[in-house]
Each structure stands twice: as structure tokens, then as C-alpha cells.
Image (cartoon, rainbow, N blue to C red; front, side):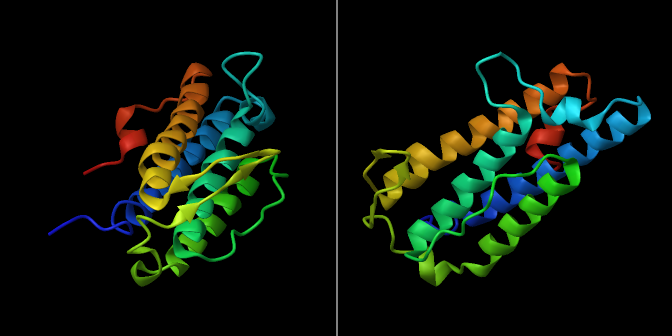
Amino acid sequence: MSLSMYQASIPSFLRMLENLSAILDKAAAHAEAKKIDPAIFINARLAPNMFPLSRQVQIATDLVKGCAARLAGIEVPCYEDNEITFPELQARITKTMAFLQSVNAAQIDGSEERNITPKFGSRELSFSGQEYLLDFVIPNFHFHLTTTYAILRHHGVEIGKSDYTGNY
């Protein structure tokens, strides 16, 4: 049996968003326990020219909601990108997961050759559905998840590899 586009996307996206949510919970608990202003984590970055943690989470959620919508041939939900607290970031993750769960396999399967042309500012890219999922969305999604993890780990939050990958 071959792997479908749905199987290669939505279940993994949901799992990793659950892991991201758990990591953010640990960061919020760490901030509270250590009497650290949570905004320090929300605005933290690994280098001066990087996006802060809040933007990393926003981009990660944008990638997967955009992917699901584009592969399904439906409108991409638009979020305001105004989250500045852990609860607001958690709400964004929850909203993204609900959207992903609303897209079913019949909508996504068969999208391997669908022409996908996402716009990023004035730049427009062009992919087949399979290229978009495997070569663009998945690597970028994991980049932003990993960066979120690394920012928090760098700032002393006690998280490890199993927090990122989840328990099996």
C-alpha cells in the first residue's frame, strides 16, 4: 500500500503541534516557577537577525494550515499574527489543529500533481502538490519547530528530544 498525501501530512502535523503545545506548556511553567517574565521567552531569539519565538510558532502554524488548505483546494484561513502570550500562542495552535482536523483525506488525496503557487510577500513560488508538501512545507515546518525548541532550551527550559519528538 502506498502512502497517501493525507497520511504524509495531517497526522504528522497534528502530532507535532501537540508536541509544540506541550513544549510551550513547559516553558510557561518554567517561567512561573523561576519568576521569569514569560515575555522574555516569547520575544527570545537565538540571533539578533532571527524571528522571535512568537513568530516561529506563527510561521509553523501558517505552514501547516496553508498546506492543508492548498492541497485540499480550499481557502487558506487567515490569522492576525498578534499573539504575545503563551495562552495566545496555545489558542493559535488549538485553532490550527481544529482546522487540520476539518480537512479530510478525500480532500487531500490525489493532490500530488495539483499546481500550488503560494505567495510570500511579492514572491510567488510554484510547486506540484507533492513537491510543496515534501520539499517545502515539511522541512520548513520542522525548522520553525526546532527553532522554537532551541530558543526555549537555550533559555533554560528543561526540555529534551522526547519533548520534540513525543513519546512512542
